[in-house]
Length: 276
Ligand SMILES: NC(=O)c1ccc[n+]([C@@H]2O[C@H](COP(=O)([O-])OP(=O)(O)OC[C@H]3O[C@@H](n4cnc5c(N)ncnc54)[C@H](OP(=O)(O)O)[C@@H]3O)[C@@H](O)[C@H]2O)c1
Image (cartoon, rainbow, N blue to C red):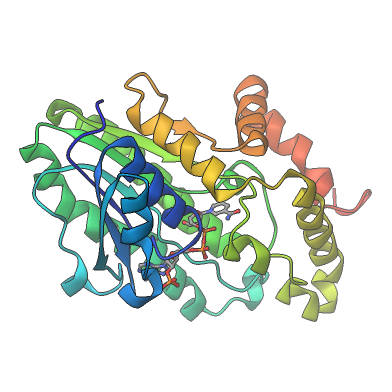
C-alpha cells in the first residue's frame, strides 16, 4: 500500500506505539495517536511536525467505549495498547486478574476494531495490524493470562483474514520479542509467583530466561521501522516479528513445527528430571 490517508495507533503515549506513530507520520500517513491521557503524549505532534509529518493526539482508552472514535479516511489501524499482569501461576491467579488483562488486551481491541472496520471499508481497504507477542510461541510459565489474551487476539485476527478479505483489508499480526520499553523494563522484576514455594523453581527459571534476553533488546524505533515496513508491504505474511529475536523464534517455529518447537523450549522452564 502507499503511505497515504489516516493511520491510527492505540497506546501511543510511550513505547512501541509512540515510536510507531512517529514512524508512520514520517512515512507519509496522517496519524491519529491514541493516548489514555493526551497530556502523556504532549510534544508528540510537534516532534512529528519537525520531521515533516502530520500527527494529532486524541484521547483513546480501549476500556472506555466513549473514547473509541476511529476517523473517516482510515487506512491503517494498529492495535498496540496492551498491559501485562502479575506473573502468577494459574492456581494463584484470581479471576479478576484475568478479567483486567482481557478487558484491555482483548475486549478493548475487539471494540476498537469493530468500530474501525466500516471506516476501513469506506476508504477501499487498508491494513489492520494487531500487536501480540513472541511469547505465544513458547510455553512460558506464569504468563497464562497475558499469553491467553494475546492468543485470543491471534485467533481473532486470523478469522478476519477471511472475513475482511473481500473489502481489501489486509491483516497483520506483529509478535514482538524484547523491545526496550517500560513494559519490558518492568518485566525484569522477580516474578510474583516466586512467593509460592512450590513454584519458586519455575519462577527462578522464568526470571533467568528474562534476564538472558537483556543482550537481545531492540530499540522501539527499530521495531517501529520493521512494523511500518510490514504495513506497507502488500506481500507481508500474516505473522511477523519486528526484531532479530522474534524473527529468529518465528523462523525456528515454522521450520520445526509447533510440537517439536514447544518440546525444545520446555527445558528452559522445567528442571531436568521434573515430572514425566
Ligand atoms: N516491549 C516488549 O518487549 C513487548 C514484547 C511483546 C509484546 N509487546 C506488546 O507490544 C505492545 C506495546 O508494548 P510496549 O512495550 O510499548 O508497552 P508500554 O511501554 O507499557 O506501553 C503500553 C501502551 O499501552 C497503553 N495502554 C495501556 N492500557 C491502555 C488502555 N486501556 N487504553 C489505551 N491504551 C492503553 C499505555 O498507555 P498509558 O501510558 O496511558 O499507560 C501505553 O501507551 C503491547 O501490546 C505489548 O503487549 C511488547
